[in-house]
Length: 170
Image (cartoon, rainbow, N blue to C red; front, top):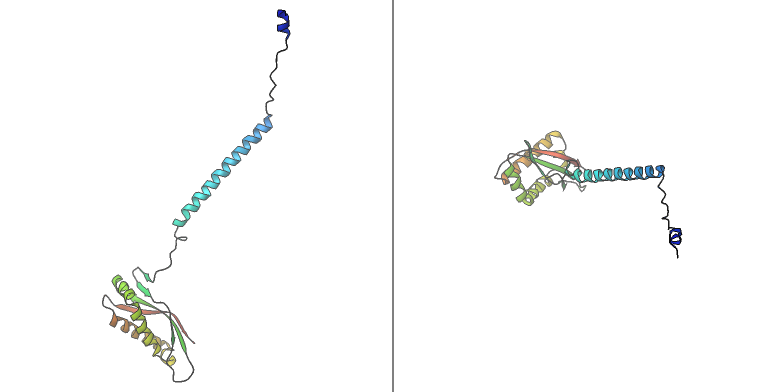
């Protein structure tokens, strides 16, 4: 073998690599930018959803029966009472009662004595007739009687006033 034959051997050529065209590169870059923007928007939405429970609207707890404020109120569950009647016809009263309290300590006392207080108010309400409580004066007398009845049973403050949130006679 002659040295020329070695030189004549064809050299192996590496395959030519085609460079991607410019439009393909631009399309890939735009696609990546859109993915990044979408990811950032998704993260911001998730982050915002985590913050929303702190807003007052979404974390609204059920209203307590005691509202601490300048006007302290205790709201009793509604009463359903059969009114006293001389006839065979039954007359029903549905009444919602809230009591204006003199102190915050009185609220705890009411909660501790709640069954006894409700029984006492139930007896007072069921002793009334439709005629006694149907007009405005009768309702005012009933408020005063409930107030006096509650104050007899409470020792850590006084019920200043009684409010009717519901008053339905049927």
